[in-house]
Image (cartoon, rainbow, N blue to C red):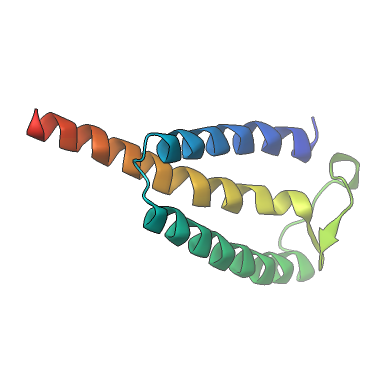
Length: 106
């Protein structure tokens, strides 16, 4: 199994939950904007710190399991988890908060 396939499963799930939160209006426009800002920050931090960790030899990737596209020395697949987390966590939070608020009011 390649890292891309493994990441695709995670990213599709995260994107689906995010879209459900947006569609149900659990995430407001402001919430979506905040999520996108957080996503940008997390991607920049991932690029910096993953390049450092890979550059000093702390971690490495099997070349047969990556696409080969890199940002610095970090394979593109390395960015999937921050993207997934930046989409999934606010969406789940908003959906659970909305559900809990409904229980309190109902």
